[in-house]
Length: 104
Image (cartoon, rainbow, N blue to C red; front, side, top):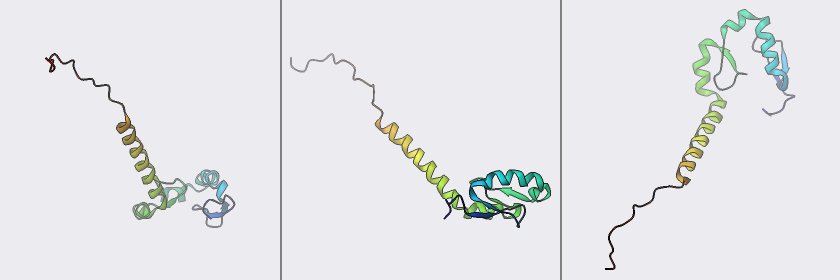
């Protein structure tokens, strides 16, 4: 399960490190400092900072990243909410007074 904080994830800086998912972001910061040469070769996914991939593979990762769909859905939901707000806005326009009297 991807949401399980006890699940083990392999460190991108050292393949022998297996870190619990709940501690993974903290471990990444620590290992980045410990392995600066490896860090230079990795790029961070724009959709999920936990995804570190070789620089040459970044564009391929971006095309296939599962988190891209989540972010895109959030953008769609936000824009739909904005359009709904615009559509439900009450107009303050009033017709000008009519000077003609159709009854007479």
